[in-house]
Every structure is written in structure tokens, then in C-alpha cells.
Length: 404
Image (cartoon, rainbow, N blue to C red; front, side):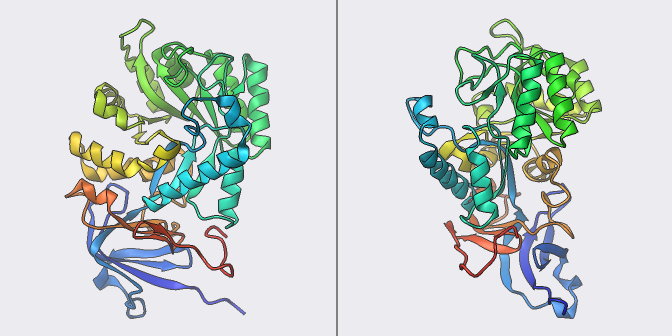
């Protein structure tokens, strides 16, 4: 006997699809089971679809936000006692779970953890996926690959040559990571590393890319300096993170237009997070705009550390208020573009037929008032309400997982 499909209608005053097209007014989304069946003006609904199950006629519905750069397990100890951190994985997993749930309540329905302690985030991902705890969709890299004395060496997998890099990629994939994160330059959180200089050369990064792609995993690289950006682009990575274009000498910027063009040709994406850095100095955003004009697809992220993993809506609001960018594009850069960069756009990132119904309902219209992005009223995962008025909605034991 064929099971009857579960259908619901979500009516909205405004729908922002995430695709960059104009908003739809007085509209509705028809959800069949966990997927979107149709979206459009209310007057186009068939008679059988006009039973409204969720009324948001005075609100705006958007795709669930995708923060493609957080670190859920970091920031656990204020004194950076990293060995203590590693020695308490149980507390660390609970800490990460709480951080992920706070992000979900804020409307972030998909998180990408881009480097954490050991394989703790993999355990959290499985706990969410199987319904043990509530949480957003979670994709994880596990421990980042770095060098001895390199960026995040205290939590990363240390690999100092091509063979060690190859083995690290294989080990991570064997243990179930969704993508590979590599520290291609030094970073701010690791003072003994050098943000301006490359940690790996082009050949070493190419080995990582070849091995990861063979195993159907994307490669995301942390790059601050131009030297590291150049090596990464030539090696064919999938995503460049930060892209500060630092020259080797302190205080210098060395934007390489030929490398930016090559990145565009290779369809390499750029994650310009953290957005909070734009508020201090607009240099990175201006460099990102130059990349964008040359054809590089860019997206926004929070780079939220621990408890700050829930700050994405606030960061987007600040960005809208301080930079002259079309709000429609800002929403696209925080939904569909990161979904494409990470290879999940077939199912997520926009409101359109056949995609999974991960949706958020906000009070007001963020195209007119950016503060609306922080007024999250309802969060849907796979067509089910998982957060309402700032609180998680816990499902009954008899109900299945959000992702089953």
C-alpha cells in the first residue's frame, strides 16, 4: 500500500528565495513530506493546496542560513590550555552541541565546522543525524591539516611533507569527514605561525587536492598571505578562506590579479569570513570585491569560535548596515552561494521546488530592515518546526529523526 504524502502550506507576506531574484509578495510554499513542492503567489495555489497550515502573512520567509565556517569545539577554555581541552572530550562534545543548537535557534540550519579537536564534531554530527539530540545540519572536516608549529597545530593533524599530507587526507576520509581543511598559511590564533607566509608549497597542496578529489571530498584552505593563495589556486583547491592577500613584508598587501583570474577560471570559491573583520577594516571586503569583479564567486561566513558560532545573523545585519551591497545579494551569499561551494545546492540553499524545506521565518522584511534577520520567529528543518520564538522544539520519542 502506497503511503500518503504529508502536505502542508506555509503562507508568507514575503518570500526571499535565496537565488538573487526579486522577492515574492503574498506568497506560499507547499511542502510535501520534507521537500518543497511549489512556491509562488497565493493565487496560483490549487484548491486542494489552499488549506494554510502555517500562517506567516505578516512575516518574511527565507532559506535557512548556511554558515560555512565555524569552529564549534574551539574557545572552550579561556586560557588556551589545549592539552586539557583534548583530555576532556566528553565536556567538549557537550559544549559543541550547545553551540550548534544556539546557531539553529538563530536561523542557521546548516553549519560547516572547518577545524576542531580530533574527531569530536563527527560524533556530534552523527548524534544530530540520528535524532539523539536536536541540531542543525552539520558538515565537518575533523581536525585540520597543518604543519609542526603551524596554524592550529595544537588541535590539527601535523603533516610536514607530501607523504604525510596524503596519509592525513586518507585517514580523515576513512574516519568519515565531509571535506578536508588545510592550513595553507599561518593564522592569527597561532602567534608563532606566520600569517603572511605559506605553510605548504604548490606540490604539497596538489597532492592533498588529488587525494581528496579521488575520494570525492572538497578541499577548503585557510589562506591569509598571497604566497599561500597563489600556491592554493595553482593546486586547484575548492575554496579559499579569508583571502587577505598579505604580502611577505609586514603591513603590505599584494593583490595578484592574474591569480584571481585563474581562481575564477578554475571555479574556485572564496569565503571572506569573518564578517566581523569588515567592521574593523574594510580592506578585506574591498579585495573581495576586486575578486568578484574578476569572476570569483564569494560568500560570507562568521568564522564563529565556540559560543560565537551563533552570531551569523548579527554579522549579516551589521554587513547590510555598513556596506552598500544589495540585501538580496547578501542573502544569496549566505545561502545559495555557500551551498554551491560545498556541493549541497541540489538539496539546500534556496527556496525552489524539489529542495529540502529548510526555512526560517523572520518578523519584518530584511530587505527593508536588516534587523529583521535577528528577529527569528520560526525555524523549519525538512519541513518540520524545530525552533519557535527562540526556543528549540523537542520532538516526541516516537517521531523520527529530522534527517531520516
